[in-house]
Image (cartoon, rainbow, N blue to C red):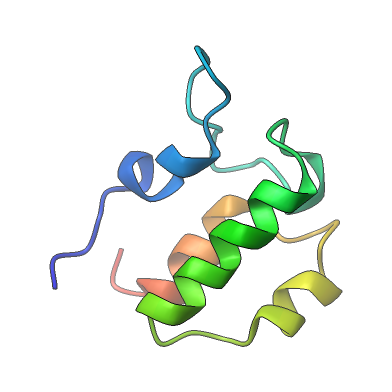
Length: 76
């Protein structure tokens, strides 16, 4: 499986008509809302070997999108 670019990785978190969120956005502050972020995390957990979703949620206010991306794709 080819690793997505960061922009492809966060595309599901884009608001309608908006730009994709940047790497420094924290999970808790994404404009798409918590339900959309949780659904996105569920999908990631199903597709990629990663930390548990519970660990990400525990650090909800400090974990950035870049943190999630580098956890899943450490070579990037």
